[in-house]
Length: 298
Length: 265
Image 1: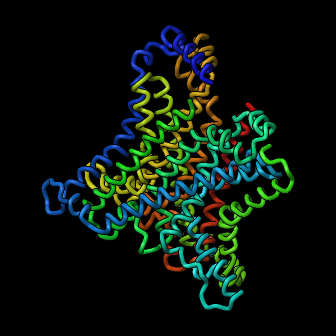
Image 2 (image 1 turned 180 degrees about the vertical axis):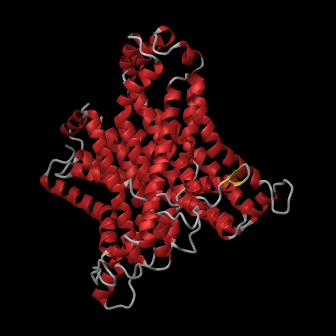
Image 3 (image 1 turned 90 degrees about the vertical axis):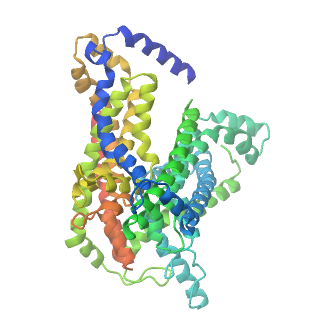
């Protein structure tokens, strides 16, 4: 792999300076072509983001101060939302990693008829919106749903035992369900490059399956696990649809707080403060993800 | 490969089904089942009806569907243009500048979409850009959110492109614009259509930024689904969700047809 990359680089280095693939116009000023898209991005994204930071420093009373930050950091609602967001994201990531690893392991190494179709299905799953999962869970574990209906039919009780949907556990279940495919996909890609002769050799030397998974497969899967896991962590930190559809007053995450402060309370400086905190956490973690996934590819 | 004995294999497959079916297959089936029902107080839904679908395909719901389709089409086209342009421009740059450009264009993935919505709301509610309450503000927000995905998939395809073709064309005297139009873009067509499908699907299901800034006369389907479930109309909401999924899948299918035809060329 590294060999191919090096050869490609050599070939490029040779063709760029003198090869006539670009005429003098763009070759001397290649950044000119980058100006229009960057200008568009600046107007639509960077300038609005800068305004959010500016607004977060301007309380309604006028002037420029850190008062909005002090107010928000002092509020219980913010601290609780921050804690909920972080533990939900961390818990979902761990859940997705474990579940995704098991599923990918079976699809790749204990294949069954239809395993390919299942892999395709997982791809399709990614193109649906997140809130669909919460909507579905309402019918499975909701107060009047499949699981509770089964329970009341069997026991004759008035209420079923499943009442966790409006608690953080409902959000956790929905996030694990929706985001596991983000771990399965890179894992399947990594497993397809694993030489199965290694598994056969380990097996013929008497290693039990658990040992093969621990000593042969897991080390190969670590980069894919790290890349998929950090992507899921960022996406969970930013998730809004699942929490909104849960409709629980008890579950407030940072994106929910941004929405409720801005739209319901019209407290724009406060919303901007929460937004800045959320962006700092997510962008920091996403930078980490980019570094990790670049390592994983090399 | 990993498990050889017959019994162990069946045990592993059983475990797989126990994990896979309730978590991934059940949600879609349940939404589909609920969309045809009026009541769900037992194991299975009851009160078969197609009424939710006739309601979901006229009036307010139909308008929301066309709103979603138009928004997604406009946003994907804009995002594809901007993302492809940026990827091509980045490919012509070297070293640090290229990394900076790439990082700039993937940044919207990392920023929460609610914050993108808030930022656009704050920026375009005051001069010089006064767009608050128009449909364009929704389309712009969707464009920002999906451009990153278009850029990522196009630049990944660019990295895999064999430079021999464009070098051959250029050495035969083709101008850069000609090389771009007749050689590089046709070679990129399969990944361009794949990126278009991804952008379309993402924009169709976008809820977070839309919730921050949709005007009353431009309500995309996800917002309507939320409004329905929020007032307790879960079964009507499921029918709307099935319509949304079907429209997304149809668009993805159409796009994949383009891709297979292009790859035979």
